[in-house]
Image: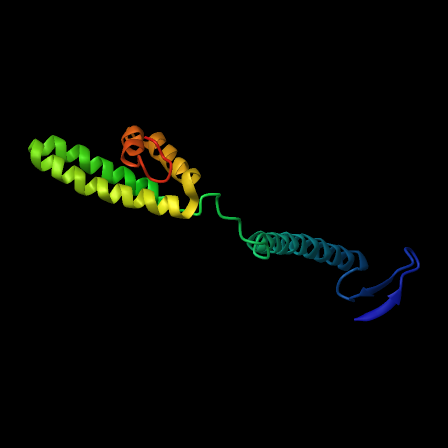
Length: 155
């Protein structure tokens, strides 16, 4: 291969004796175009990877979200609903005397939960949990009555 200066276009080009100058230029242009498209695809792939990496790191350096105003877990409402459901089930499946005994036992547990809530967050926390129970079941009024006398709570 010999390098020559092509006077027609003023560029330094490579000429191969078996091919004309135009044939090499065409092949060279095809190679450049193919590299550009392949590079473009590679560039887009790289951009996608960088975007995914950035998305995976968004929020990692931030502070954790503050806990809700109630420092109580959402399981308290669920636990109270289950206890109230047990009282309902007892009256449906047992004799009245046995169901009344079961109710006293369960109501003592409900009152202990209420007292714990009062100790942790006062009536505001009790009210919040009671509202959660009422919004998710028909036991809101029962819970209000069971908690009567805890703090200044009047059911």
